Length: 568
Image (tube, rainbow, N blue to C red; front, side, top):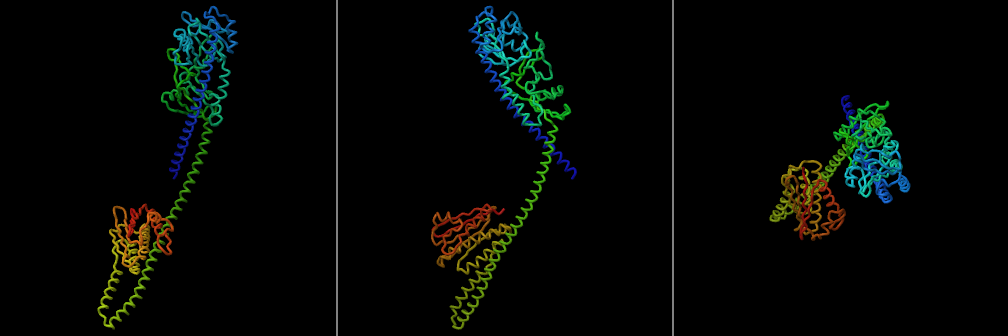
């Protein structure tokens, strides 16, 4: 018993662990869907800002002379204010670089872009082709814009730049705006809001992080004249926070999740708190927020990131313990309910069996009583027969005596004909109906074959009721006919695994199609006098009970009922 309880405990524990993992996966999928939708909305919002910068660039182009040497700083400041920009710069191509030559921000002037990776490549394509083919950033005719990024001239500022060049000037127009509106969007309906709401909805979640697998575990910084620059696109994580740190172990699990494309997790104690970290690889169509740098120093994109969920495992264990005891209680209640249900079923079976026995006893008692009445009638008739015989002898009417005794012997032989059917219940009902037929002056002819294969029991008792009801129905009909038409033919046989019984008798009148349809409904009867109209409906209910079938074949002068009941 101890072994069994141990096995049950382990099974339930594993089940609850699996449920927890499924819950984490479900939450992750929910977060993933929400974040991806939010990222798509944020990208659309950012693209709208990019389109605004392009529109501003075209307006600026029409307001400035085409030669860079003819543009003044005062003109740029005036246009910056008119367009409500953070700043405005102009860039020109040199022999081996692209530099900022004029700007409303003095810190921008003279800045080289040769080390800017994908940005420098976009600038080069603009100068050479007037359009950008780079598969990253926002591309519009004669225009390109990258995602929000930290400013090289001021590492505390996060800005969005637009770059426009159509060949009519000798410089790229570079307007840019701050991220105040974009940050407000993120805090209200963006990924930051989704993460905040998710943590509030699931108290056992401590932290959610969107990890850049290309840079996680590395420290990528660039030296600028204004200090070290840590770009946003190279951050080790770009969503949520990363306070629950175990960088070396986390880096290993991040790469395992990416390489296997499977969810992986581990448990640990961080900041004196038992936690579980789950790493889920997320594939996405566009991931502009995260870049990597390959071994030769070239920036590269990869449309996959890792979603990391940190759970308070103490809370998880507490919930699992509650679920464990709830499950035990449920199992106990189900077991107790099953026992009660089993007892009820056994009682129903016993009751049904007792009812069947009572029904059998009632049927047999009715038929035995009828036979006793017939025997008493025969005794009474016997005295009458003896009186008649004595009278014929006294009167010496020997021919009449001979005819009378021959008729009497024929009736007695018919009455005492033992029915060799082979199935006791069916034999009993046919024997009883034979006696009843003789008393009612009805010719009842029967033929039964191979009935011994039908076992005694509840089904046999119901077959007796079916056969009895059909013969009684025939009795009621033929008793309304002249004596020479009072006949009934019935036959029983087995065919495959089905019992067949057919009965034919003449009718007082042909049945209409409507009467044929109605004959199995409660209370319907075509007979005169006090008839309940229940015999045929009860018969059909019994046949349907055993998945059997009854067929009615009405003709002009007779009617046939044919039943089929499976016996196995």
